[in-house]
Length: 392
Image (cartoon, rainbow, N blue to C red; front, side, top):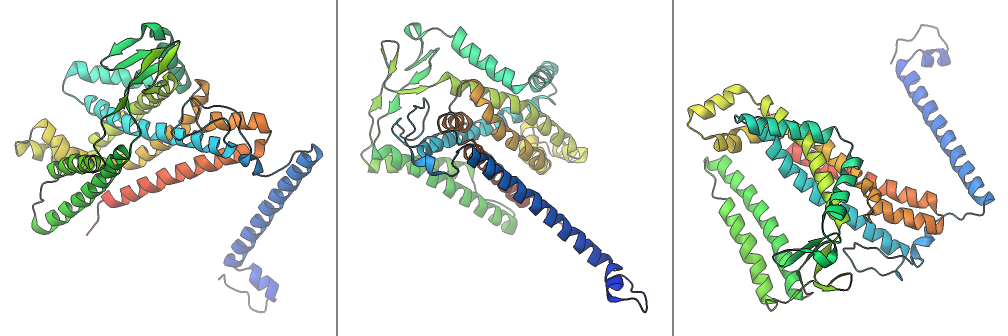
């Protein structure tokens, strides 16, 4: 509270209080924002009603009437717009997840190569970073799509790579026939990953208490192999695969990975990896030189120094900028509409054009990308909290 003037009236004394003035200013700002928001909503409702445009999400239950080329769940044109929206959402999440993993691995390798003692490798990595990150992503997506659809042979002359075929229509490969055994194996793999993470956490606890940790890598590999195989065998060990067969102008059977998906995955991964490589390089350079000299004095090889000394310390520096790159990648996936991949934006645009529900369609897209970004940010912040240095 501010100092009150002796003999001043109550309003004067209240106004002389800095706390009271700050509170009043904040209330006035909230009232102004609320007034402007209310005016905007009322104006929107009035304009929509004047044009006989209904508001609401009831259109999501209507029949969509259009097909989607790439889908992770069952979908037919007779399904609803809501089902189509879910297909587009899953496509966006799937390609974003794969691109994040691929960009992280590639960026880590390029970042380490940027500091390699090998002159040629170091210069090639630098050329990659400078060339890729200075070309707009949309152009790179168009380039990859053009390479896949123009330079690859037509379906009739598809390149055979083992049991798979590569052509302008994408990559046709054998695929397991639907069977409970495959679903059980997938669930077993997920359970094995969870068990591996719990065992790694237990190993860290034992190391902190006893000074020596039990082995982690080989037990994790063993459980990730044995548990899915056990679940697969318990449900009959199915071995039937659907093989791609050329029929007319396209392949039938198997699994066909469309060129749009391949181009989007390659473009997002390679573009983001260039930025991640610089983050890795900066993180490695941030490690104190004394740490590296101490590791060399202990006789550790270059790979051991990276794995045991440098990268664990680098990770703490990398997490915040890595979070920004993962967020950018997930939002950049919306550029898939430029090459025809049926992601969330593409499906929503088709829905918007057919129903005219522009406000609702755009609002749903905004809500999805906001939720996705907040989820990635929250997960990375949680991990950053776990690996941070705790001061004594």
